[in-house]
Image (cartoon, rainbow, N blue to C red; front, side, top):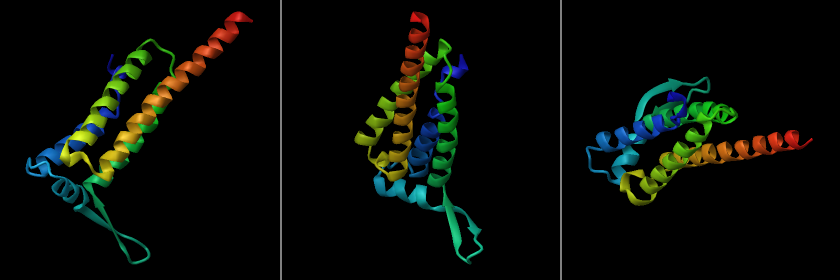
Amino acid sequence: MLIAIPLLMIPVIIYNLVVLVGAGGSGGMAAADAVLRDPMFSIPMASGASWNVGSGDLILFLSLILLFFELLKSTSSQKVAIVNHALSMVLFVVVLIEFLLIRGFATSTFFLIVIMVLLDVLAGFIVTIISARKDLDFGGA
């Protein structure tokens, strides 16, 4: 049953923790943006430049990896996939409400997470519809 839980819930929870706890609970957009952009570490590049990696960058990196696995999960035709699609839709509604109504969530980082959750929802429904059409075509032939 754990396969039904959307993996993109993990970066959403991490973002909530970083913004709400890291911003001192103030929840302001400037504080949230500062927390997400503050470099956690720096990687020297061959060009001599320094690549600063913040917590927002790491959350987006994790989100992209989990989106890949969510897209793979959406291709399964198990009964639990329908529950996964429904929970992904609920997650999308939650992140959209957070993005539109809560001050600390109106950042580019969270917007990209919202888009990834939306892509997960769309991919799940599109793949399910296409596979259902194929099943119907084979059944009628």
